[in-house]
Image 1 (cartoon, rainbow, N blue to C red):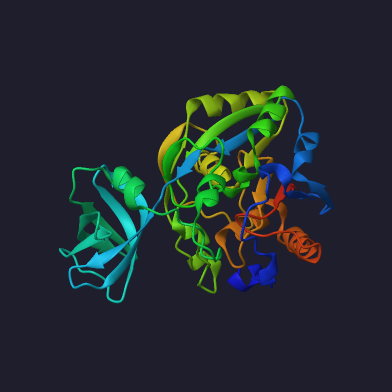
Image 2 (cartoon, rainbow, N blue to C red):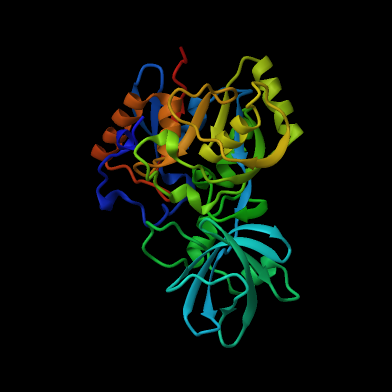
Length: 347
């Protein structure tokens, strides 16, 4: 398939720059992947479209303050975005500078008042291997001088409100550089309502990388090299899903990151507890082994996530739903509105 098949025009005015005043105050578009039927609802209506003993799977990753600024020994400015923490003192990172630093060079991150020395150990494609030469861990350095890495389409710098709202209320395991945005719609009251309705909740962890914002740049999508992310599916979650299946109920993935973790752990055809890297690339024609319904935000043109939801609901259905959302002025991307999609029946 061609990347161009997943392109669409989006007015900039529909890109949400700020979250709604209340987490659960966003809109909800219902899409039946089998019939293509669309309904306009509010996110607060979500419990009405679930049944007792359905299972919701959340990604409990926590966004880290991954963006730092500093200078090279030469005095040139650098911007560092940590992609993955390898161990307490090493990380893979993107570096933006007038000239890329070479292996063995040093950079100083922070300000004149407080800065930390970092050595560039090497490079792999667009990622630099960094060693933090300090008694502090990478996490501790990020907490002291790091900034929340808002997506590139959000035009303002991260403020105190973003540090709260660009994080799910159930975030637990630090490691993501982008939020699992479908989960941003849930507040404590909604979670309590769901549990009181007899709906089961379970968790996976997938540390979302910056690659989630990158468009596919090759013409044939089969030639795209998918970015890799670390995920964990615990045995407790596998057991809850097995129980849901036995009861004939639905497994509902909260976000594409939860779905990628579940489907990665079920590549053999059977869901198993796992903790490893995944570079799974889900495109139309993919056979889904675990998920029945998907709650997700609206995704960027030509993105791997748009290809994923097209695989889940059907290309024509997604194109129709997106055009409907644009006409009805839904809010798009990380701080935008949500969709609840039921899976298209596979042939």
